[in-house]
Image 1 (tube, rainbow, N blue to C red):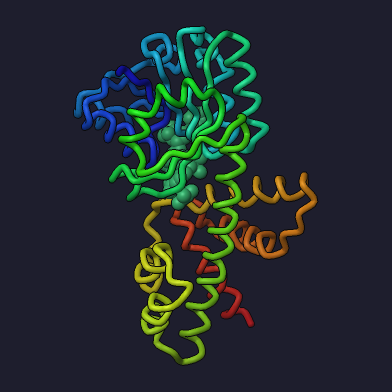
Image 2 (spheres, rainbow, N blue to C red):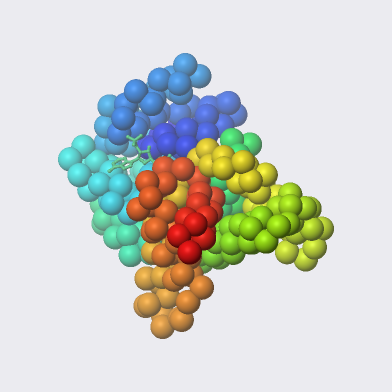
Length: 291
Ligand SMILES: NC(=O)C1=CN([C@@H]2O[C@H](COP(=O)(O)OP(=O)(O)OC[C@H]3O[C@@H](n4cnc5c(N)ncnc54)[C@H](OP(=O)(O)O)[C@@H]3O)[C@@H](O)[C@H]2O)C=CC1
Ligand SMILES: O=CC(=O)O
């Protein structure tokens, strides 16, 4: 199957590489075109614009930073809309809000095209190893057509119904994750400042009822102030912001998520946005220093 891929950031690069390695013909595009070179070395073709990729491929996947990027790639000059038609499918795997996804769906389908939103749960390593969890919604026939690609990219795909449900599920999951990361950060700093060995805290946590892959995976690096980005903090803050907006719409009180969002905003203001989201831990250290 010939697949187009728009957006070669941390996730898109790993995902398109997996498709190539598993025998898909892949045509890539990235705003910063030089990022296509590594994929080309592994057999990918390059499209000069999103429209050129869509023209060439029956199915085009996008993995872009945020709602503004997702909209720009579809609606701007040389964008997806210029070439989408009734024989083509567009799958947006970026994390965006339901409104953005619905707007893209409307534009694509009004030109006869087929649309699926399919955000993913899982970070750099699951993307590299094809172990993502895919949260798809939209046109069922396109979902079924995309299953061979989803089977390469992920360990499990969910079909969640109408467009917007994939975005909502992803935002709920990441709202929980962002809140957990803040509680974990406070725990690590509290353990250390109160005279405990934080490594022992990691061991204790890992044996109890709140053991989880995130604490296990991120904890040791956080103790060394190593925030090499797997999931950039600026994207986690975007997800908290979008999840809080979903809470507003549905009149759901979320004081824990709101506090977590403030911490991620603080981290961004400290210049930590491009580091891993675990760098939110630094905000706890700063607050403690200043008291
Ligand atoms: N990293 C992770 O662990 C996970 C991320 N996600 C989500 O996946 C998406 C991608 O994340 P990730 O790969 O980490 O992000 P990166 O920041 O590494 O990559 C972002 C990509 O979006 C492109 N981009 C940004 N703005 C624009 C624009 N205006 N027009 C066109 N392209 C644009 C970038 O292009 P350029 O190279 O030119 O800057 C780049 O290709 C995000 O929505 C994120 O929330 C979901 C699950 C896990
Ligand atoms: O969106 C991030 C993730 O780890 O999932």
